[in-house]
Image 1 (tube, rainbow, N blue to C red):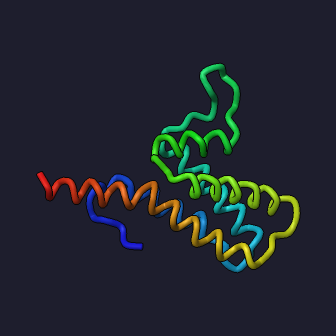
Image 2: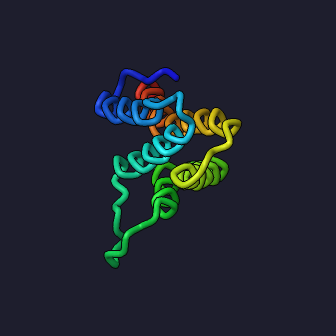
Length: 130
C-alpha cells in the first residue's frame, strides 16, 4: 500500500497504527488485540470523542459508527470493523482461530486505505483537475 506524499501530517499516525498492528506478528492473540487498539487509535485521531454529549463513555462500537459517518465508510467495512473489535475482545479472554488472523490483517489494511490513503489520493487527483 503506497502512501501518497501529500499531507505528510498524517504519516506519523499511519506509522503508529502500522507499528501497533504489526508489533507482535508471531503471536496471534496479541496481534488481534493490537489491531483492535489501532482501530481505537484511528477513531481518536479522527477526533471521535470518548464521551458523548451527555458525558457517557462511548463504546468502540459507537466510535466505529461515528468513524463510518465521518470517513464515509462502506457498510461492509463497518461490519467487519465491528467483527474485528469482537475478535480483539475475545482474544483478550481466550484463543483466536489462527485462520481468522490473516483475514483481519488484510481487512485492517483496507480500513487504513479507506480512512487515510484514498482520501489523500482523491484530494491529490482533485488538485490536478483544478
